[in-house]
Length: 237
Image (tube, rainbow, N blue to C red; front, side):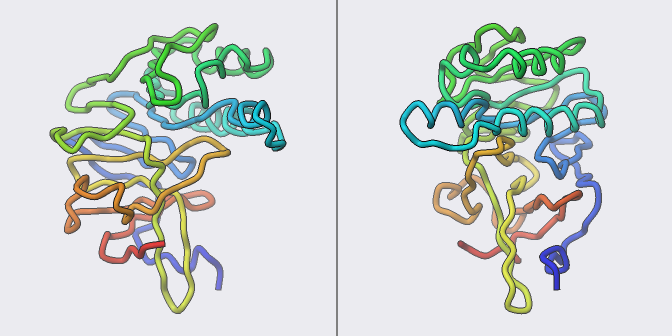
């Protein structure tokens, strides 16, 4: 039995509706709103590898290349007019300045011809250097509100990141754990997009009070599709 066979959700293209807008929870971890031509990603953590290397942890310096390649794949498929990066786009405040020219050029190429918004995060509170785009604390588009950290007081339509959600299911004695979009119809928390980012189970106490348990859905990321899993099927761990 493969890991994919353990899923018992509605598999497909991740199509859903959120705050009155049609949306696609893409298997790469990007969120696309076709009627708005808007693509959102969260927690890219670009240049994390070089950041931890400066502190003596030697890791392969390939995270930025891999993250940008996946981002290019999503942009090529959806051709958005607007891109929103929901904070912690760079792993630290000097990440954009430290980025090698080849990666900077690749990023600037992705940004060309579209509106690009950098939402400030706790890792990168200041605007990135040398890459353009508009830096904002949060961004409202129609019924949607994009911010880095979720707020328990937010109204319907909040889309946030920061918590790096994942989900776990168990069937027939086998366990599958994947990054996920977590949503209950009024709020969505996006998975971390970065290649060197970890994840936190959506049932962890850090998510307490953010979702209605009877409405929680986890859109788990598979190899080439997403799987919509009802909250009652999720397990801790």
